[in-house]
Image (cartoon, rainbow, N blue to C red):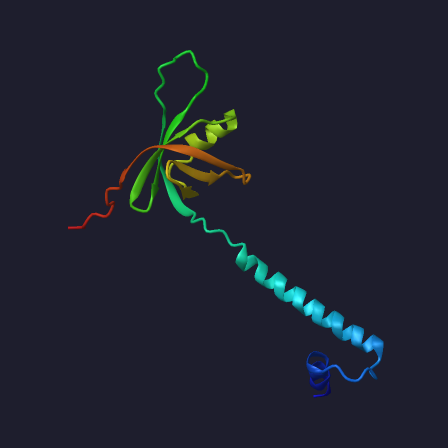
Length: 148
């Protein structure tokens, strides 16, 4: 009970006629300042929350992208991903040979994506952010069939 009175005194004590110990006054000031800083730090993440809406997508199909230049060593892929009730076909051009193998064998796996107007943004396994252009989009056929 004594500690409750002590805290009440620290937070709610009014400034008296100056007969108080200066060290005690400094302690109260520092405690109030510390509490104010803590309140600011606790509310800061709520103010910085981003408005992006990442969604879970499933990679449906990966096909080599047809090119008119057969002499080019650059390989691109048409990657179809399903997000909700929509299938997006994107053009993926890997930057390294390792990235080529990553996309070719990821069909059927989920990935977090951010759908924008003309692009889809995603992060790779190392956390690097990439954007790929959307070639086309269409409604997904309902995969549920009635059992008879």
